[in-house]
Length: 287
Ligand SMILES: Nc1ncnc2c1ncn2[C@@H]1O[C@H](COP(=O)(O)OP(=O)(O)OP(=O)(O)O)[C@@H](O)[C@H]1O
Image 1: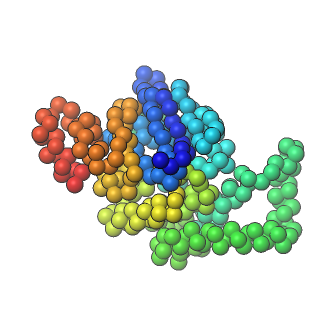
Image 2: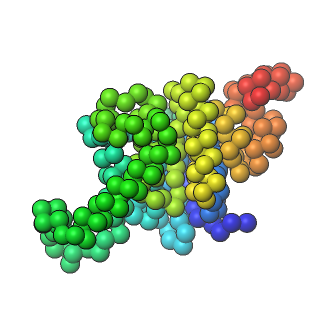
Image 3: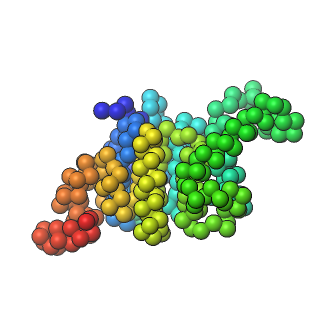
């Protein structure tokens, strides 16, 4: 059993009368790829928002490594090594591909740099002075970051590498999604959360994304993945957790989840259909 990186216990989020995330438990070990699946509205993105500090839980806790991080803001979590991508992709449209990735790297550096005495404005002034003077150490660091950013971009091969100087707004939808992942990787996250990385992608783009995620996993990257394309989930995951109406209804190895009638029924929304019919429909959908 790998050492525990993320532990979610009894996590709950209500919106008015709706319990979007209902007492969910989840554990992710170092180096694992755990997928969260479930029908639309099951609570997957809300769960991600709670883990990454974009939303506050009404109950339960989130532990990361050896700290209780429940309710921490996103910036503080990024400093601890939690990075995410969004369902609809978020990049800085007016920045180039390279600069988008550099933003990720700079965020990491800012997070680990010691605070300058807590004097308001001093840190910003120091940054400005460093930028103006560019002492050799800063120039070297900048060069190193650029090389690191290029290496990350190279992971996406001919999709992004020839477009280093292109503004993000000029990229195709699939390339913007790739760029968003590249930027998250520049944070060198201990935990990477991917929210539907293949949403809106065609079959060959999806296959490429599968290979990229496989590569990240083989390098030891811990990943929490939301994905609707179950074929991809089944190929990549160490474990699969299934949400339905905010509750975790199953968590198991991919093969076991694939054959779990509760999962099939919930996922396909065929609660009133006979078991045999469900299995027939599911066999088609999950094939
Ligand atoms: N800010 C909000 N205010 C009110 N209701 C919300 C809010 N965010 C999410 N919900 C509701 O919570 C439930 C869970 O939504 P969530 O987006 O987490 O589901 P999901 O599993 O990610 O769905 P999908 O697969 O469609 O992305 C849904 O019923 C949704 O309408």
